[in-house]
View (cartoon, rainbow, N blue to C red):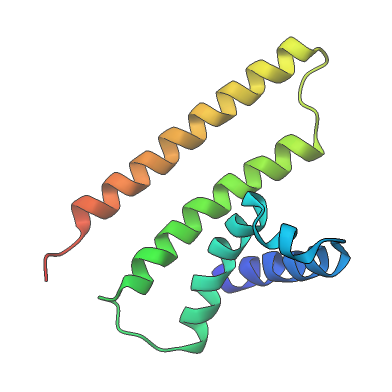
Length: 117
């Protein structure tokens, strides 16, 4: 499932890179960097067979959390939630708060479950 979802992000990133007029400017955009953080650890883990105690596992967890935030960004851009500007802002604030709660709980669980080597 991870690999399939990240291949979609990789294909989307490659198409956007190909279409971009300014390639270097595209590479330093925050959204493009976030997409790289989403697909690069998963594809690297699929190619290389690393043990589970490596930094790659932490990057895989971070990739999953970033994928949820990317989904929320796409959701907000694609569907204009609400009929008025106030409704859209409220939905945007609520979705941002939910994402922050989700990401912070994931980070806390990773820190608590991390074994000391």
